[in-house]
Length: 168
Image (tube, rainbow, N blue to C red; front, side):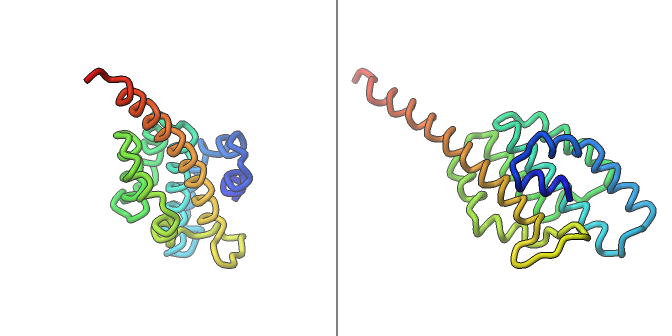
């Protein structure tokens, strides 16, 4: 819960401090079976998605932290074929190739809401319309859209200058 709340309140330092232990915590909970059968895997997927999105946004445009986090999530034996992961990996690839049109499509609010619709709350949080995990994901995506917009504008600005000052 503190990881989700630190994202919501924009406290990257606090969010980062809990990242190292979360995969191991989820793995130990899965081994002991202390959650209901269907709850454990959904919570693992939710936390893993938020961790990957967090690293993608925080280290933007670098993706080294993203790949490091993905490797550390191997302990959870997650299926990377789940819808949220496929969407996140598509977003990562679009950022890597600087395909800003695709990034805009993947980070459109309606698309994001569709992709994160299955993310679940931590057990102690009540929800109204969007749960805390979904709100955290939207917070990360909003910040990423700002960074992508700045990067796209810089690219367009330099491309325009080159076009303007070329000799014909």
